Length: 146
Image (cartoon, rainbow, N blue to C red; front, side, top):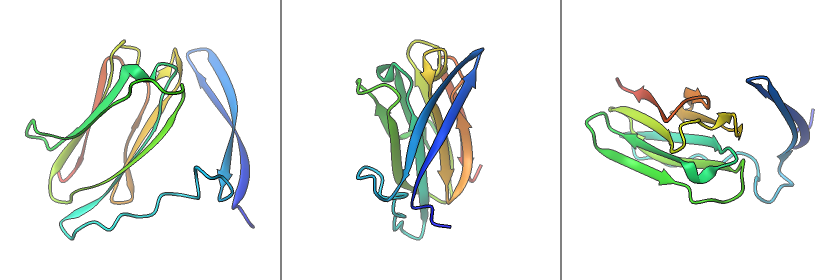
């Protein structure tokens, strides 16, 4: 079966509310062109991929990746943009370290479900290591060699 250009109906439900949207997936989309190309990481590192769907207030959202000893390795803050933006972030991270991912919401309502249907998913070395969206001011996850 050819699945290079498929339309999928997505239904998100949370806290008694629902919304639906149509998502186009395929190589004909100029902003997509399939999944991101794998990174060529050095031998002591592995690929990390963050998929982040923002809610209606992206300027409230930020995140960081730390090395478990209070050092911040990556940090990103969003300053507007369209609501429900989708962000893909790829990095090479240490293969032999306990890492932490923390997402913040300045308003304390997370990214799902009161003001949109945001979600984040982290992949480390090709394996899903965390997922979320419903939280208060912040949510943390450990991954890597912990």
